[in-house]
Picture (cartoon, rainbow, N blue to C red):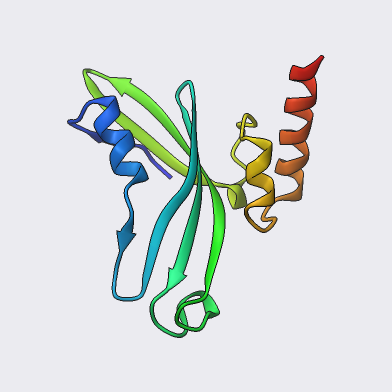
Length: 121
């Protein structure tokens, strides 16, 4: 997975990453987000608009945790989008997000818990 750089301000890029998206087959909406430095955490709900999308009936949905890495280069802003299933090596995801989406990576979730436990010390 590579980086995508755009000729936008950081704020414009973030708004675009948070905007709802829809196609004939499915729609996606960010239902929660947190910006931690240059890491944008999201919880995204994907809803099937047609039967068979991700094995769902039309109207069924699932949520996942997204991790967007943000970076500036030469005056342009870029992002790299990851999700829990690829075990992003970033662990500052808000703990409440873990209750909002089914488990995709138990090991990653354990590291998120350890990260937050270390902050409380």
